[in-house]
Image 1 (tube, rainbow, N blue to C red):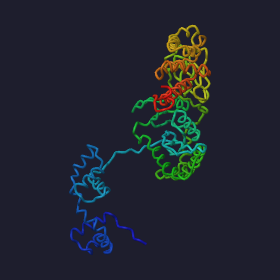
Image 2 (cartoon, rainbow, N blue to C red; image 1 turned 180 degrees about the vertical axis):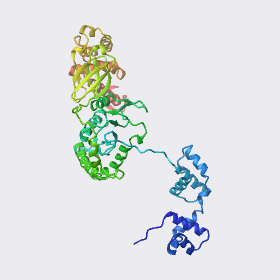
Image 3 (cartoon, rainbow, N blue to C red; image 1 turned 60 degrees about the horizontal axis):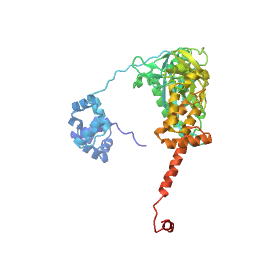
Image 4 (tube, one colour; image 1 turned 90 degrees about the vertical axis):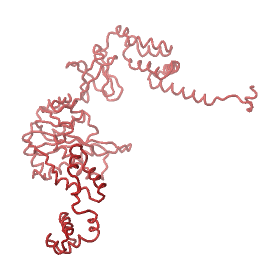
Length: 485
């Protein structure tokens, strides 16, 4: 069995005493080691390395200059080490250089141990998660790991989601409170947009949807400061543990769904909570029994997650939300409205008053229209926008004019206003003759979508281009051309 190597300090002392001229026997007595040990560290490859480094090499450095460069100019110690290494032309490894620097200029940062009462605070953060493979397409999807930690007991809730958007963020909170069986007094999230609209060291602007959730559960939101990880050091450290522990445990597994991945994580949490905390001296599960009594009960019932967005009402009396369109009263056109959305319903507000309610559309590009939101028909017909579009269409040609009139009927001229505007906007890409050809085909096949008209015009362009490439000048060397001449 090999003996344990002596410390680096003893090795340096052997070298120093040898440079002073002491014998092996004298060095052995001085460091209280055997002569064979001294001979071992004064022979072989180690001795050749030691000879490259002059005795007391660190005395050759201008440590005051190095310290000023590092502290005042922010030059990393590793860069300074590389410069000194090139200047002095002998090999001194960086850890040795770093130790000598810290002996002269010890870094004594002032720290404060944070103390938390039971049920006082939950710290929340995200990190990159485990990838999921879609078995149908083979597509790899990224996930995000949501982590919430009770600061007193370090009891943890974690789950994976596909995004960090407001809907996933708020739903993770609801499931976290149900997992804990209660709510703390304060929430300390990171500064992602789902939590904070505008950051500020003292007065951050909280996302309205997050404020509603906090109001429902009677919580106080205290976001961490920007680029201040110590403000939520507990959740930061917990995330590191999960990255080194859980992520490594599942590194050889393949997950095909979010449900499967979260199920594996839930089982790992049970094991995680039973482990004894190195600093606290007890398991998180044991400490949580004490903290759970201090949590506030979930007496207000399940919270229905609502997401918020500000949208401007378009001139066709619709606003765009989540790739669909919802109507609001025509008098509010051009104004910014508040949209509150659940999984099934859309509510539109102006200055706190609800002005419209719609069932939420599932597919993209759908319209939810309440006809009472349109202006009177005669007034809409005389409005500038529809009239302007009709005039523009007449300048293009009869087919375009006919198509615009069908899109903007007199009894409801705002129904397809966006499509009519898009049709006239095609003049930026195509000539009037090309647009006339496209609208002619659209009327012929009863397909009024802009995509069909664009594809029709582009197809004609390709055919015309091919014809130009095929055409050639007549030659008397060819039989047919000679007869024509």
